Image (cartoon, rainbow, N blue to C red; front, side, top):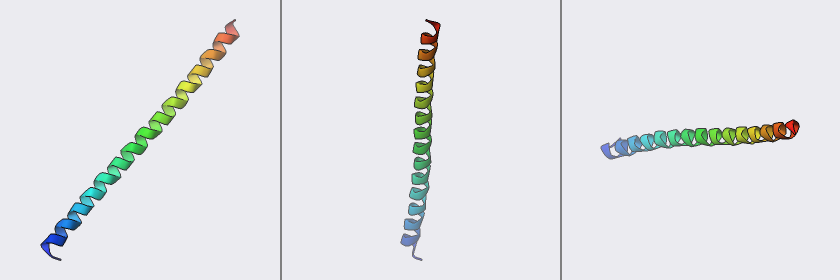
Length: 55
């Protein structure tokens, strides 16, 4: 391999690793946002239920 093709390979590997890390981070954030929204909805439903049951 020439020196130029080794540099291109190394750059590709680094970009691939960065892309993989960004994908994992984005997926993690999306999952936490989904779970948080679901929890807030359940909390709101519970609060409404408790308010109506007290009256």
